[in-house]
Length: 411
Image (tube, rainbow, N blue to C red; front, side, top):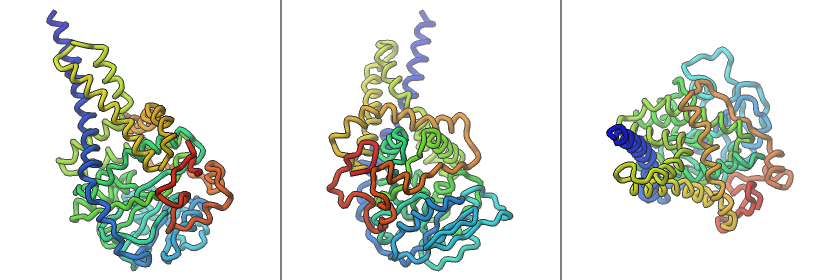
């Protein structure tokens, strides 16, 4: 009898610990979105003009992809630099090729931006970093802050599964609305952020990491009383074109952030640990709820456990709902995405779990497609991307319009 009681106690401890770890992360997300986000819109008034910005685009040699990115940059920005690993030709931008002999602690993308920091001149107040596939939207200036993060909205590139996961991820990223109240923003998206030139020059990129964007903002926050602002412009980047590419991308993200968590102060580390667990192990949340119903009476409080675990399971659907709002999907399409939420949760977490179990130490660029592939996938007219003016939206003309494509951005 004692063995049975002991086993029940062990099961109860395991279940409650798992629930509390995941529950803490979920509650923190709610706090960020519902409480900490208050006031962020008032902080985004533009103070700096386009002539106060130098754009830097990072690539290896994706010439046609980079050309489209440059084409979308507003005419008001005159200083556009492409930092490349190979000699490519880009109209409307000055290309700088990182020498093969250049050595530093940083590797891959970090090595390229560190070389640029040392060798590419700039007189502007801000450096705006873009990925090779980032199409700026509604970009007319910058608010006054040390670090300005732009939100993202990945565009469909042919894989319905990765697009589904990106809608889910975009919903989770609504927590960024609360980052301006944190001394250490919990991550950065390197595909679209601006930083004061003087701070970037002082902090530098010369560290060994595969998530150089988050690493930079954590080090800057540690050394400065960093001011952070978020601009909800929804820059358009590409959803991974294949499930394999997305899984590798998520693995790299998780590996890099776990490897860099030493930069966070002690107060932030428990918070970040629970977030890592919540992301990588979120597919197991339904199992917690199921266990509570299959094991009634096995331990004190199992009824309360069933209620809480079911509520946490529901949070996963809230993330998807917020993603649908960000994408402005028509409400008639919401049931389709909500029904597919469990699939999105699993696929979005596979790479993260892989990164926890077997961290990667090398940087692998996520595959990109050319403009004609994006246009075909989204049923756009030929040349629609080339005509895009970065001061406007890419597709819809106003916030009042809905997107009616299920797995595409055509409207």
